[in-house]
Structures are given as structure tokens and as C-alpha cells.
Amino acid sequence: MEINNPETVREVEEAFERYEIALMDNNVTVLDDSFWNNPRTIRYGGAENLYGYAAIQKFRAARTGGRFTRRIDRLVITTYGKDFATASLHHHPANAPGKVGRQMQTWVKMPDGWRIVAAHVSTIDDPD
Image (cartoon, rainbow, N blue to C red):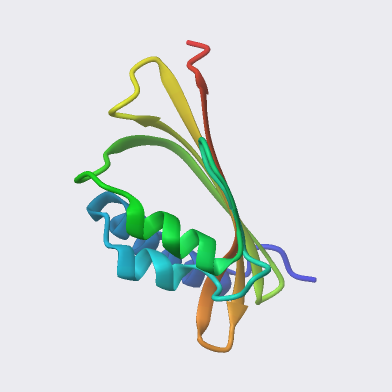
């Protein structure tokens, strides 16, 4: 199995960037489209455990508020073969001084493109 095939890494970076822009703009359509539309899809958030695409979609639709901003410290994308990848992000959310955000996503290349099949979002106290 090839780890970090350059073409596959580029594809996942593009999918991740599309998701990131949508997250910053609260573009629910793109956020929904980024997740695999399947009951097996999971998203663990700061205060919620969402099982299945329908639950994730319902959560996104109910979210209120405007833009979300953060300073990204580190993004690690690792691809395994040509159809599987992880994205791990370390960031400082603008709306949570003294906190560090962590985001992990598992991406799979489906027939209609790269989709998140599992995600975890959390914050901790900034150790610095």
C-alpha cells in the first residue's frame, strides 16, 4: 500500500479546503455534501454525538450564527492507498480564548468523490 501518493494527497487537500471554506462561511449545503450520506457516518462534536448522515444534517440545519474563524496551527493529511485518508487539525478558535481545537476526519473516496465517513471535534485548555 502506498502512503501519501502525491496525487491522492492533493485530492484530499482540495476536499478538505472545500470543507474548511464552507465551515468558515457556514455553507450548510457544502458541509452536508462533504459527509457520506449513509446511516453509518458518525460525527462526535463538542457537545453532541451524531450517528448517521440524517442526524448530522439535522444538526447543521439547526446551527445558528455567522462566520466561524480560527487560526490553524497544524494540519496533517495522510493517505493510505488511493481511496482512504485521515485529516488531523490543531487550531485556535477565535471564539474560545485559552482553548485549543482538535479536529479529526476520516475521508473515503466514494464514486461521487471524497466524503467524510467519521469526524471528531473537541477543544481542550491551551497547555501554553
